[in-house]
Length: 130
Image (tube, rainbow, N blue to C red; front, side, top):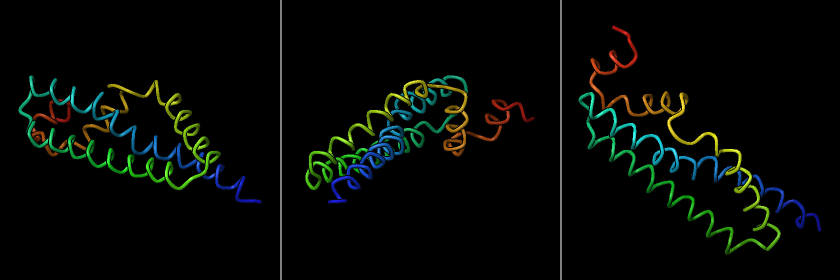
């Protein structure tokens, strides 16, 4: 039947999406946002409580969402769909390996998301916009 091919095909892309959106957010918080907040707090006045709270909320929310999706896949999908889902997630993992940590784009994204925890003077100093 056609669903024997369509469902695994769709689940492959669901696996890519779940990893790229959910798991990658957790990895970026752990490998960039938290270490960068800690480093910046040694140099500038930073609302570390607020920044760490936002980081924790990101980790909790994406862990719950990812766990719910994985549980649904394991419970509701057949073996071919499960395999396709995990192949998609695994492929996404391999592609993302070079994007972890404090790359230029991750640091730029960090300051967009966490700018509210820095005083304007610190941001002007960081970006050289005085």
